[in-house]
Image (cartoon, rainbow, N blue to C red):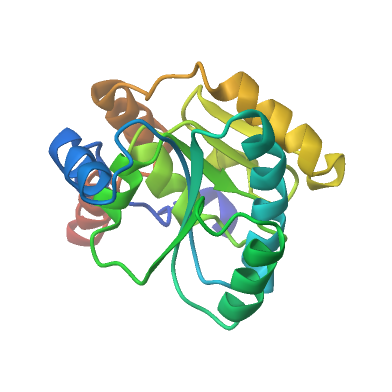
Amino acid sequence: EILKKAIVIHNAVDVERMRFDEQKRNAIREKYGWTDKYVIGNVGRLHFQKNQSFAIEVFRQYHKKNPDAILILVGQGEDEQMLKEKIEKCGLSSAVFFAGLQSDIQAWLSAFDLFLFPSKFEGLGIAALEAEANGLPTIASKSVIPGEVKINDNFIFFDLEAGAEAWSSQIEKMRVFGRADYLEVKDRFVKNGYDIVAENDKLERLLLG
C-alpha cells in the first residue's frame, strides 16, 4: 500500500545551465587551437571507477585512423600520474589534454564533439546526463550506467567487454551524429523526470499540498 503512494523525485540536472553554448565552444576551441579538431571528452574524477585508462585505449585506436582527433579529460584524481605515463608510452602526449578541475562544465561540454563515458560502475551517471543536456553524442558502458539515463537518440550503450577497438569503431560510426536540438532535449528531460526545474516544481506542489 505504501508503495502505491510513493512518488519518485529523480536526481535531476539543470538542463538550461548545461545547454549547448556556441560562444563558449568557440572560445575554448580557439584558445587551445582546436577549431579543426574532432574533440572527444570525458568528465569525472581520474579514478579506476571512471575508467579513463580504457578511454585512452579507445582513443589510441581511434587516433590511428583519425589524426585530427583529440581527447580531453576534465577532472582530477589519484590516477592522474598513471594516466599521464600511459599517454606518454602510447605516444599520445600531443593529442590528450588534461583540463584539471573546471567550474564551467557547460563550456567544456559545448567544446566537445562526443562524450566518452566508459565507467566500470556508476550510481546514476550524472556526468552522462549533463552531456545529454548539452545535446552531445554519447557512448556509455552498457549494463553499468542505468538504462533510464538514455534520453536522447544520439546516446549509445556499448559493452566494455567488446574491447577498445570495437569502441573505436562505434565512435567512427557516431561521428556523423549531430548534437540533439535543445528544445527537444529539454522536452525529453522533462518527460523523463530528469529536468531539475520540473522536478522542483513537482516537489513544491507535493510539499505545499
